[in-house]
Length: 332
Ligand SMILES: [Zn+2]
Image 1: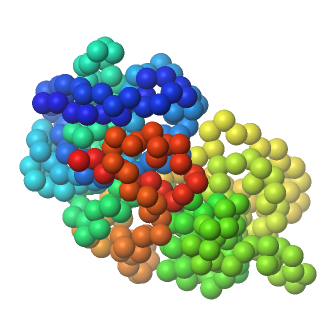
Image 2 (image 1 turned 30 degrees about the vertical axis):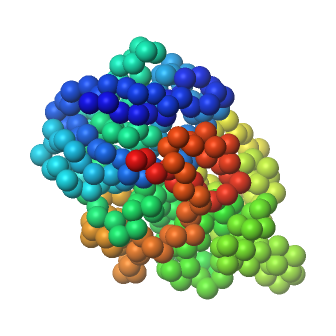
Image 3 (image 1 turned 90 degrees about the horizontal axis):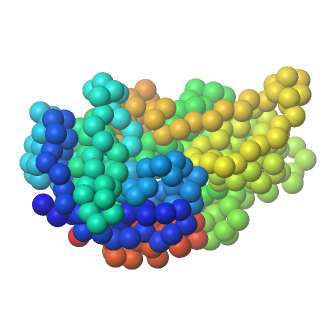
């Protein structure tokens, strides 16, 4: 069977759409007809050469939604719809991950255990989650951006939170602000983004409203910008905890140790698999957090979605990345 894949052929080069031959499935692998995929900062880092060049050429994408067309896994059957994610399901994961290779004119194209920027993708069973989406365009977000935002929100669960601020209202920041507002651990969630439109879309009041006031203070800052400049601006402005979330490749911070020792300010970093994705998706179309009782629905995350692109326009989506909300690719 043939598949069309967006392949990274070199750092800082446009992706090439190549027709590749799909190899025979091995045990534990599933062939998924991708319906929607989205792009996130990780792919941008790979494209910019911040990740191992040794794997080039390779396919990209680590969050997707599609339909099983062939399965060598006892857990998935033909016709079932699934979320594909880089996050391995810890309920089943056993370290024996097969890497898929597709043959083409470039030779072997590396595809890892979960790549989603292909019309038909071979994905490891541990990277798939059974899920029937009523909003299929939003469903790829369940593979990375939503669990990443939940992971950040879990980091502060149960803490006394007076005023929270989300810095950077791209995909992760927007999803996080939605979760914080639904959870209502604090009624006061502020935001900041260099792009005024994103702040407006979030509906959050600007963090500068309180930073400029004498009496108010921020207890928690979630920084989802991926930028050292943001950290240098906001670190220390929080009374309690500073949470770094998202992609920070090729970025170095400087910090005054006395902030931690004397002022007892906390700094933590979280990644998308801090929250078990399997339990997030256990209820089918309803996303529910296991340790608290609020229900979340996929449609709650509509604001995370930016433009929908066709696969052939993937390089346009890459060039616009960051200037709009999270791009979604229609794969067929
Ligand atoms: Zn991601």
